[in-house]
Image (cartoon, rainbow, N blue to C red):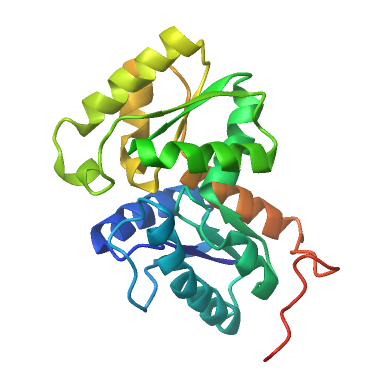
Length: 232
């Protein structure tokens, strides 16, 4: 089994972080590979423009993955950029980390909060929560007002996230927290130990779910919505 994890931005250090998480999230007989798009993409995805600029690169990696025989794909951005479009060209399952995180959280926590980076991301995440049908269980979306790349460079980032989780538990009565950015993946264990609140890393959830779907023999439906696009 081969799974391709695509980081839609161009920051190599984040891709390496995602790759380390991916390697820990699959069984021994599953090969997982993590890539950046080969075309120019934003250094981070922090709004609608960045998301739109990344989609062509993500689609290109899925096309190459189909040729290379990959069985499933994970889009490692909480905006779930291009997921529906990728499902039209991929035979196997394609999953974004927002959708995966919501499904995982709903199983282990009846009420949960999403902690993201910048306030401008909140409305888009709320739209995704509604799209996926989890608005009754997601009690809030909070931002720590920290740019994505500062998750790596700001020494206070982990403490800002810890305080946001603690505040959400107190004020929103949430029983679990989803990380609203793939760049938070390396902090999951520390934050759970610090806060004693279940922390859901959508990246780990997505990789595990795609592996399970492939192992079960499930593929993307081509009946109508995700039918292969006609060649122009």
